[in-house]
Image 1 (cartoon, helix red, strand yellow):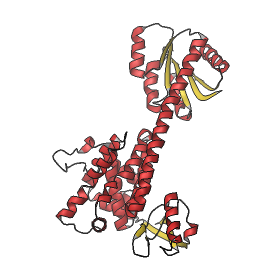
Image 2 (cartoon, helix red, strand yellow):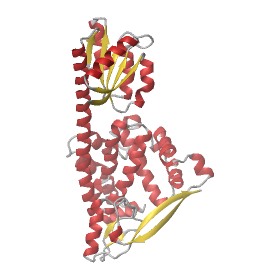
Image 3 (cartoon, rainbow, N blue to C red):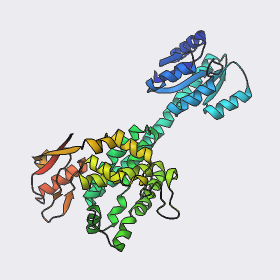
Amino acid sequence: MIQETILLVDDEANVLSSLSRELVEEGFEDIRTVQSGQAAMDILKDLPRLAVIVSDYHMPGMNGIEFFEQARKVYPDVSRIILTGVGDLNMAVKAVNRGSIFRFLLKPSPPDEFAAAVKDGVKQYRLINGERDLLNKTLSGSVKVMIDILAALSPDIFAQANRLRNLARKMSEKLNLQDQAWEMEVAALVCRIGAVTVPRPILEKWQSGAMLDQPEQTMVRSIPRISQQLINNIPRLENIAVAVGYQDCTYTIRLTHDSPKGDAIPLMARILKIILDYDYYLMKLTTPAAAYEAMLKREPDYDPRLLAEFFAQVIGISAADVLQVPVRTVMREREIMIGEVEAGMVISRDVYDRNGLLIVSKGTTITEVLRFRLINYARAQSIINPIFIEYPYSDR
């Protein structure tokens, strides 16, 4: 049985009935029918497993090509089949070019030919989504391994990477960037990976907001470029590498003569700029409201629409909140033994070994790799129980 959803669109009820019957006989389980393009648009978002749309060309109000142009914006990967009783070659060419039509069938279409076209459409849908899932899982898995290694080498950069990933995920959801969501998360995870080339004392000095001398500034400013070079070595991360390389670009002023500005800066880079600066100010000033106030003083650095969306939709505060109702973040914490550590817990205090080496930075979300690392350190008696995990909440 074929479980994916098939949507049939035709203004003639008897045609819909006939087509539905043919598909049922071929083993299709979920078949939806509507009698106009507008009616189809009204229900598209309620069909999460939609694989194939079959639409008549000649319909009142919105013809088949116009409907498919709109449907592509909602479901870009769905297979689209146009069905018409007019053997018009010019119309067929327009259908293919404007609506990205998978198949073009003439009415009346023989039942076996119609069913075969729909089955091929389902296969095409599965192929596209299967390749995307495989790509996402393979690349995300590869990046995860790299980030887990980063956790061992540079705990503070790893902690920041996880904070940035969570912000990027929320931002992607609020902006409806489903097609770019995985790229945005990966970009957030790896955008500071070049920091591992900077000596730790200089990193700590930079992150604390202390003044840097010229050589130190040069090293810190090289982080985006080095990060980009490292990411360029991973196939299919080209867009991410470009965004990471432009992460420090400001919206209204060019950093260098060849730097982009405004909307010429890739969208991912504009988002990275916002979440990186927000994370910096949040760690320094401790409250979202204070971070927002600091960023408002540098408002020309950011895409104004994205900045407003970020604070309103992701952080949940506005300029009015900053001016009238300060947000106070209260942190609760409790002690636990290392044997009680579970993936997903958040460390509230830096964890050091007996020699004063940082093992896990505060604010880090524990992964399975980090959990085993802590356990092994405890077994070797290189760190002292207990450690502290956090329970944050906000009040006003």
